[in-house]
Length: 199
Image (cartoon, rainbow, N blue to C red):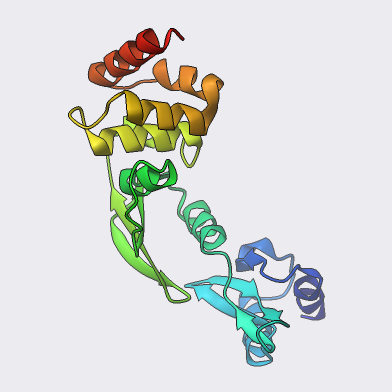
């Protein structure tokens, strides 16, 4: 039990972990006992079911507790559930500055089941998709570009949209995007754009 306590003490503040990340030879009940004690002592807190984080305190906010990085918690959730996620097309469009709408809820496409959860006050929504094209290059610029293009659709994707995407992901990734498994209309739009730009 002391070994568990020391492992957590050595963690960086804000670090996300689950019980299986710890090394222990005692029973899990004893591990949970240590975790409950450390939570009571405000060393750690629960970010989501079975997912903990070491609390960080802000000197600038008068010693106020800071929430963990939501994306780090999400990564731990999908690792635990063995699912693949992708940024929703609406969020991707915002990242590429194609849309100015700021979604209040973080939305992801997932190979897992649809659900809505709360992580330290932040609302996160997972929408199931069986479309493997949308889950290509998960949580990568290329994958975000695919999600964005599919979200906007054939009528809204033009040279201006493709220019913003290319500027964001770079020429190398843009060529990978062009050669990825995407619908014919997307390939044609990219080909036309590159032709117009003499790329």
